[in-house]
Image (cartoon, rainbow, N blue to C red):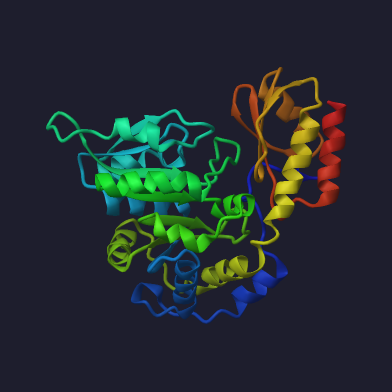
Length: 336
């Protein structure tokens, strides 16, 4: 048996999703004429209580466009030191926007208003101008840890008071909503920009949507063009996104349950020194032996996973991980 726990980006389109893609009505999206792309953007914006959206090839692009929309060169943004926008987007903050980054040490990637406020620079020619705060939900490097809306509200209030923009890297936002029980539509009250990824837990093959007000999205379209993200008959991909929003959100609780089963079993293994709380679909655990040695043992049994440090391994559950595969992984873990 082969079980791929490397990431929730490895999923394949379901038969229903493929049918939706084949039957999509398409046009030239750069001309604004692809009705399926337009429908996806409108649907996502309405879901999150935002005015408008723009469909892009990746979450990295939606995040980088948002940062450029909300900053000017010589500005500074505030984020946790584990943030995807800082660690895993190729240095794009500096390259694309000429912006510096103030990094905080949050709790499993989650930062608080008490941590943010002292790091906002005073108006002084020696300091970069603080203009943006970026949150990530769920936090990848935090093992799928979540912000609740109650966590977000005081941060949003501080940003409004200090005239800062607030952006959400919502790579796994629906996993967070599944865990917290918060409503997606309420997010629009607090964020200036929201990136919603469709190609992770929701199972679409490609794409993320950036949500914001109409003026921001108008500028975002110019930036998407400059970044090379203007797709033409993109409705075939957008149809997969619509299908995922309609059919794959409720089932995320299955992935969370699978992650909890794996985390519980790992906690019993004598070769595991620590398991982070598995709130959503990511399990991070530390190994007594080097992670590479454990990964080889797993791969010999057909189980694919990745290390995130010399002694840390990540499992990610998703819609292509089935109950019998979870049982198989548990069996293998017991044998190591």
